[in-house]
Image (cartoon, rainbow over all chains, first blue to last red; front, side, top):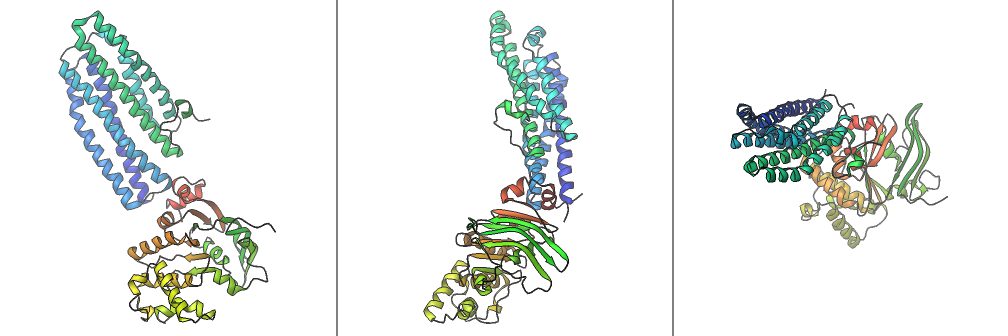
Length: 225
Length: 254
């Protein structure tokens, strides 16, 4: 293994560690919101600092690799893709932190049937599943799995799309819990954004493996012929 | 014979040193006013190939080549081609700067004097023009009588480039022109190569991958006498098609 390969492996290990940390944050923030668990929410908020610190370390590491090793070809794509993933992972951490903040702010349980109607638990499951797929594909050098992530992201978008009408109905039917409905709506938006960031990570991973730029392509083209 | 659209074009070049075949059927086409970099591990045949472009191998014992080497569509190995004429058209810059132990001025006009050009006004004009082109004029204009050997390595190399340009070639071959120079001099040579392609077709052999990336339009990767891959430099350094190219430029072998 060349010195550069060793450096790249270290970046990959750090990114995977950060991904797993954020995966737990996502899971906990979902549980905390759905079941109103303040202690769990505090845990998510506490780990946010660690994610931010990891982001800075990985940034610096990539900058050093550019400066000292002048990577080319697949090595270059590797550093570019992991550097971009790094900021997306941090953003996912931010959103999980934001959801945990809602739990602390709202200080009460949102009606479970409303949560179910809005399909929020399903959204958290899908996002968790997407992120897990990304982790597995990076660990196993798999290029096919991330393509399934795109399909799942479209499901998230669909649920999110229906949320505005649904929340409007909830508010109309039960004006007393308008605040809860708004928090529910905001959380749905956040999970949808989390899905977008996971999709970015999957795209970056494919860019490294294939040198293929998927960003801003129509979703149909994202599948290999 | 149909005239080629390429400045340099080779057709199925095989080369041998004695019984040893060192180049295997090289087909390569280079357009005018481009910079092409030859890369590959030592002994891959890239320098042999470079020297075929101006018949520098002709006097090497046991050297033999097959196939065609066309410049402006004409095979330079045809009997009627005069080698001095060819060398005028195809200049060469070597790894180690090799100025003559003469003044800066006499170094630049050396080729012209051989051609019998001795008119002071013409020589003066060529000296100023080529030293300016070689980005050396400002540094030496006040003392052109100074011995060329007293210049720094980087200055000597730029002088050699000026000397090459003085006879107005259309092609300049460079065999690792910056490998003996410090980073500042290297940057000056690279900047020069970039500017020179407006007027010349340049072929450069380099062991420095990043130099190839910085100066060339096209890159050819040689390995054990084969031309493995020839493509836009951007493609070679971001997404080469052949795994051997990828392994070489990322330092995984060679």
